[in-house]
Amino acid sequence: MSTIGEARIKVPDQINRGDVITVNSIISHPMDTGFFRTAEGAPIPAFFIKNVVVTYGTREVARFEWTSGISRNPVVSFTLKADREAPLTMVWTDNHGEMFKQSTNISFVSA
Amino acid sequence: MRDRRTFLRSFAAGVAGLMAGRSERLLAATGLVTGPEDPEVPNEEVARILKGLFGDRPIRRGHVDLDMPIVAEDGRVVPVIIESDLPMTPDHYVTGVHLIVDHNPDPHLAAFHLTPELGQVSLSTRIKMKRSTWVRAILETNTGEVWADYAKVLVTLNGCG
Image 1: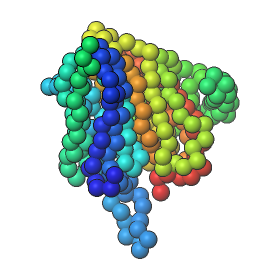
Image 2 (image 1 turned 60 degrees about the horizontal axis):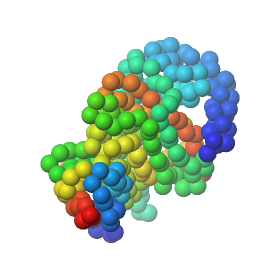
Image 3 (image 1 turned 90 degrees about the horizontal axis):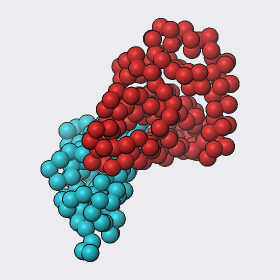
């Protein structure tokens, strides 16, 4: 986790249709508040993820609005009702307008 | 967990008692509706945020569980868990969860907009805290109800610079 924007999404290995699963995510980002200075005294400008959009298949299921008050290398976990086999996609956007995307597939164990 | 909450509530009541005069003036000025055991609204900024988000709707305590450490040794990384027992069905669901840290430079730290597709409300993340303060987790439902839980967190190392 060193390159800015490198992201991971973790879902359970075994999912049955209808399960409410926990989705864990992390993205590498400095989340600079703009309040700090370098050792040389130069101000470090604010640089943070301000928006996260979660899409399941074609539907947007959650949207998070963040400030630089979220810790460096932001983690967020949430639940999802796994009722269809479809990709789960997260797009993180920072205050420079840079977008970072990661996906994982929601698929069910064969009965 | 229960012990901590009992302690926090009594602590909150004590603080509220001490600050009652100021709190009442601020509340009267903003028209915010809060309960007697709730933390006071500490400044104009938090009052403005609450008013902007929830207007005149009462902010009631219940249906939300805000789980945070009593003491955060490092204000740069403070874990937050927010859960609710409210339903997430197409007819009745939680539309948004707001995290407000009273004494942070930017108190309205995060907003989580949710849909019934999540199945339940269970969120966790890590936040920065400048100093010891109340944290508010306030959610609203699609029918316009507003529910809250509060946690007093003691911060030993400033995480905001």
